[in-house]
Length: 403
Image (cartoon, rainbow, N blue to C red):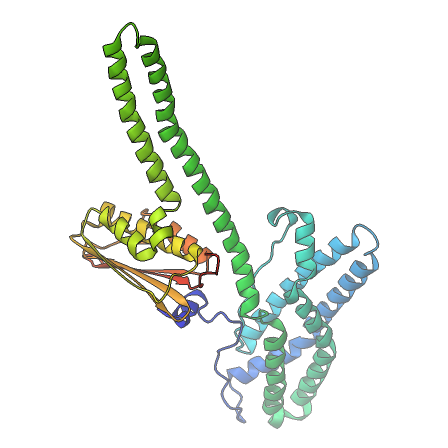
C-alpha cells in the first residue's frame, strides 16, 4: 500500500482540476458542443449582471456598515451567498462548456454548527473560495458584455465564423472557471478534513476515558470495597472466632489477586508496559499469544516509530485479533508489520469464513474512523469463504531524543 493508493482512495479525482476531454474541433456545420458554447456566451451578460450587482451590494453594505455590529455578520452572510453563485456557475460551465469542477469543501452555514458565533464569523470572512467567487463576479461583467456583443453580432453578420469565435471565447471562459471556481487545492480540502477528523479523535478519547472509568468503578474499585469490608469483618472476628477470621482473610487474599489482575488488564488496555520497554515485536507477540487461534507475528522495522504511532499500531492489531477470535472461525492467522517509505504498514490475515464488512458491527468502521483521524487508512478484503485480509496504514514518525 503506497501513498498514491491512499490518495486515490481518499480523493478519487477530487483535486479541483478538470479532467474532461476537450470538445471536438469546430466545423462549418455546428454540432451540439458549439451550440452549447453559443448559448453559454449569450447567457454570460444576464448572469454577469446578477452576480455583479449582488457582489457590489454585498461588499458596499458589509464594509460600509463594518463600524456597526451588523456590518461584519452581513458581509459574512454575503460571502456565503457568493458560494451559491459559484455553485451555479460551476453547474452552468459543466452543462454548457463540459468543464467539470469539483465542489469546494463546505463551511458551516450557521454559527451554532462551528464552535460559536465568532468562530463562524472569522471562518466566513477569511473563506478563500468565497473571495475568489467575488473576484470572478467582478471580472465577469465586462467579459459578459464583450462575449454577448460579439456572439450576437456574429449570429447576425458573421455566421460562417461564429463557431470559431464561440470556441475561442468559450476556451477563455473555461480557463477563467478553472482558475477562479475550483477548490483552493488539495491543502484546503485536507485542512477541512483534518478539522472534521479532530472531532473523531476527541470523541474517541472521551469514549476511552468513560470506558476506563466504568472498568475501574465496576471492576477493581468494587473488589477493593468488598475487600475492605471483608477485612473489617475479619478484624472483628479475629479474637472471638479465629477460624472464621482466617477464612475471611483467605477469601480477601483471593479478592486481592483478582483486583490486581483486573488492574493489570486495565493498564494493558491503556498502554502495555511491554510495548514501552521492548517495542512492537514483543508487544504484538504478547497479544497474539492471547488469541484463540495460532498467530504468526513478523515485525520488520528498521527502528521504533514514535510512541504515539507505536501505540496506535498496537491497539489496531489488538482489535483486529479480537475480531479473529470472535468472528472468523479461523484455524490460523498472521500479523505482518513493516515500513514502506514514510508509512507504517500492518497486515492481519486469517483463514476463516470471511464475509467481514466495515459496516458489519465488528467495530471495523470505528477502527477505520480512528485511523483516518490520524491520516491513516484501513483496507478490508474479505470474500465469503475467506480469507480475510485487513491492511492498515499509518504515517511513520521517528522517535524523538526523549522517547
